[in-house]
Image (cartoon, rainbow, N blue to C red; front, top):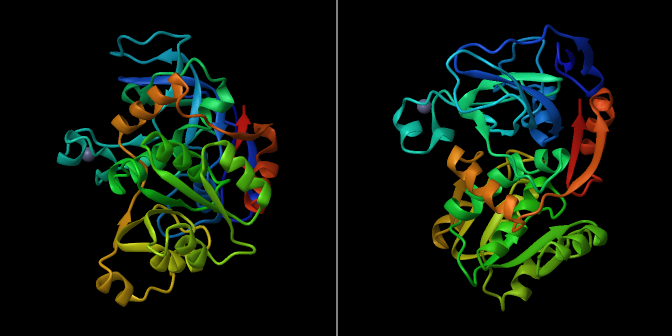
Length: 342
Ligand SMILES: [Zn+2]
């Protein structure tokens, strides 16, 4: 099968085209013929390398995978060849207390396809049958692939961590990002008022079309002053944060006393300045979040199937243009997801 692989870390140029043997599903596994795989910032981090990544070369990136079941291993029942499927991106042991209590993304053995397990930059992938999720028939393959990680991540942040309720004011950072696009819509689903940010007036306009109530152009406006002005000096109830760096530091002042900052990423810096006096005097809650449970993805997919949540695709490129796709995402000029089709 055709694949794009890593044999070393580095810039986009380390992505190599290779032919690999067609994988064969073992007991309890199925093989997917991949129709679309969406990019995430995770792909860029893994490609660049870091101490958290333990790759088996040749490594295939790609966590957001959709396709068609094209082979079934021994002992798999209730699944047929030709069935469309969304791939659950998390692998876990299925036996520990975290897994059995529905928190599989807290499993000690949790891995993400494309990160510490082989991913979807290829024509096929073998996965456990437990990782098949129902396909939202309303969506084409690129749109379905664009729905997985961002909506799953945003769901846990908004619903379980921030526990957003009707009337809450939520600041969603970076309107055009995958998590931003998803969090704006999930916050609206739960009745919140959404303030979002971007350095582009065009992205703010597009965010309002998705449901955002207000936009702050951070190329011109001060985030803290704007949040205070929009909330009668009170501050926002919660922040959906994934930028890190100076943007995270600003959130400590943009949130109200007792408010929540939920962080799932640090695209602009992982060691922000943190004045603990803001945290304890004003009783802030800083909540870490990674991915979501398998049950969360099923909830997200039901809303996507019903049209209550809508993915945004920026562009679709063939897998052979993976290098260009990485450059596009790294340039930060996208609104929504970049998707590859094998
Ligand atoms: Zn487990």
